[in-house]
Image (cartoon, rainbow, N blue to C red; front, side):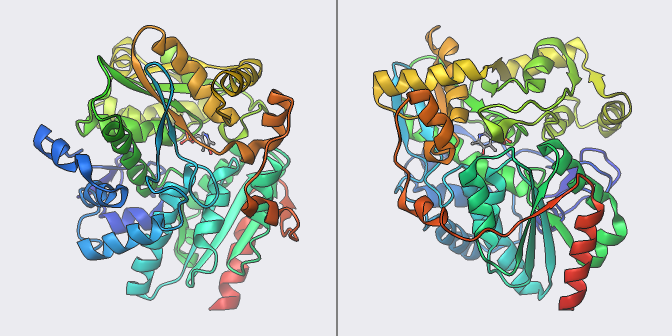
Length: 466
Ligand SMILES: *Cc1c(COP(=O)(O)O)cnc(C)c1O
């Protein structure tokens, strides 16, 4: 399988190159040249596979000859061994026609573990083969960073740098990132928003000299491998439903950077019978607005009760545009140029019509988020994290029309203890593992929202070691 950049200025790359580079050199994102289409027979054959085996089938369609089947199988078994549920992504029933896919049984209790564990193992494997050192940089709204620290800590030949928005993440998220005590991990609290962190990452990648001098790589969902690994649980959910539903099946996805929702779109493209991917946002609603009006315009980032979704520039939307524009990189490049020059771009009616075939959307305020957490606790004894509550709330309108919806449970409620307790007006218990980190010494540096200090730090520590 070969990959191209959404801006079209680069030669095709193989999976290993795409895994290691994160962002394309022309500023675009890598996408596969084509999406394999599965027939009914294959869909049936996969029905009874374990999570790891299902992942093996799906990922090997895209990873080319980067790993042998046995190597990939080892990587997946190792990656999911630390999950606390046999099914990895168990599906529970919330109410009639409405299901909840629990994606928070990994080591840091958010769905980010699904992909981060696998790509860390992929990096370790490929670097071991090449005897090569790299530096990984990632921006986080809270959960990507903790998943990355957990997955990459102590791996030789890899240094990890994490940027999170200072005082805009939950206490537990911060503790998970700053208490690893790992020599190969450095954490920066950026005095700004997630979008500022993400622009620092994009600036660092635009610095060609730095990228090649220190082998800079990225593990945000701009890295295709993350998207790829997340496709698997859409299939898993479908098989767990076991055809026990009538009519159409949609997925409601709490959305920030549009990585998870885009993975669902790829699952649909591969032939999984999905009606709509329902994009659920908080008041940082750029995607809900673009789907309804065709105007993609970023606003200031609002601080909400669902901090992992406090994002205005949804990077992966560029991948969707490339697909909807029939892989026309010129038009994508022009739209992205408009966005950076004028702060917005407008989509034509025909594109909006295409979007509406695969997507729907809705926005949820903090007040409704609280009400939803409260409702499901009182009525069903189910505790939702604020992000998951947003997906569930938006799904409700579709469920009420008779459609079957799977809402994604993106994080464990304990990660957002303060908010959940406020919503329920009672205290909730937190898993032992989280209790332990609360006491540990933190290591973090607060920096202004500029790429300079981070670039210097990466160069300095790279030189020290080589
Ligand atoms: C990252 C995250 C999201 C948003 O996912 P995207 O792929 O960025 O759209 C939603 N909920 C939680 C808990 C997250 O950690």
